[in-house]
Image 1: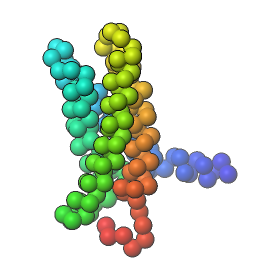
Image 2 (image 1 turned 180 degrees about the vertical axis):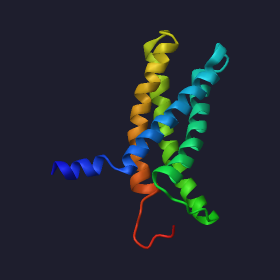
Image 3 (image 1 turned 90 degrees about the vertical axis):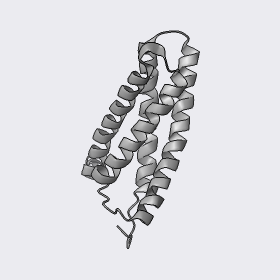
Image 4 (image 1 turned 120 degrees about the vertical axis):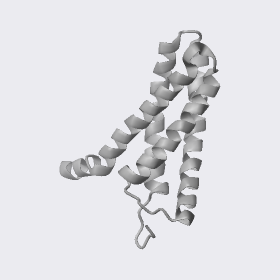
Length: 146
């Protein structure tokens, strides 16, 4: 039983998803930091822009590295990208609401507190996005056109 659990949790897909998820989170954090530098852009706008950058990065690495899907036919890509963006939009809205809510509830605690909030929100986002990607977007079915 432990062997089956180990095989389920420690395989190429889950390990590469975690690594790519960490890289996507890094892209999100770095772009957020760049957007917030100098306090010129609001938390709301910076969170939205960093989400867009991270989603674009995530689509490429999830498609090619994690789920090894090399189907580049335009019709297939349009369907897949639509599903990916829809799922990420749902988790992105949830992430945005959580981020802004946590920062507002925390008051003026500074940038380190914002980054703590971002870490909490990113953990929730990582789990949700794996579930969406595995069960819906990059789902492998028999006879599937790939």
